[in-house]
Length: 125
Image 1 (cartoon, one colour):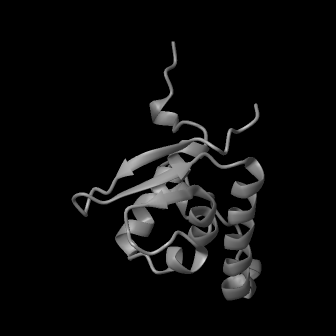
Image 2 (tube, helix red, strand yellow; image 1 turned 180 degrees about the vertical axis):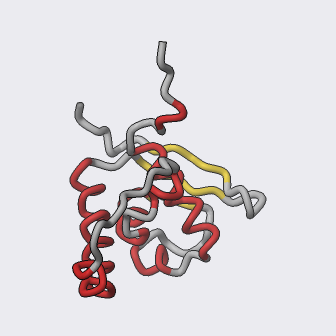
């Protein structure tokens, strides 16, 4: 299915009354880029330790918080945010200036809308 990147959804900021951010759905390529940038950063920082580790275990916890860690926040939000209520324009530099709570909330919202449903949310009949 093709993603209509012209449509966006307005999210009310849960921590700042009256503030909002509009995000759009991302293409698979945009999600891949955000994941690849995150992997490169982790490998640059921890590559030798990771390569030397034996018997690594994959996280069993299927949560939005765990999934969000797989993506670079700046890349993800630079693609996703189409507008916001702040006076500063939406651009990668201003996305980097978001506070941690706002950034984390937005990344989780983008990941929630652009990945498969969580296992615990699937309706099995």
